Image (tube, rainbow, N blue to C red):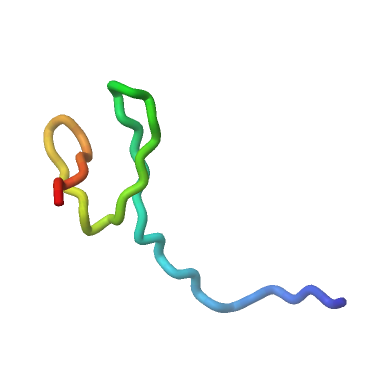
Length: 46
């Protein structure tokens, strides 16, 4: 088996992770469902 380097461009990751400061849990959300505020990145309620 021969390993060759790829030359394809990588896709951008549509997900963003952030840590909830109250619970300490990591949250994963779609980038389009985020809004930035002075308090940091928060998910938009659907």
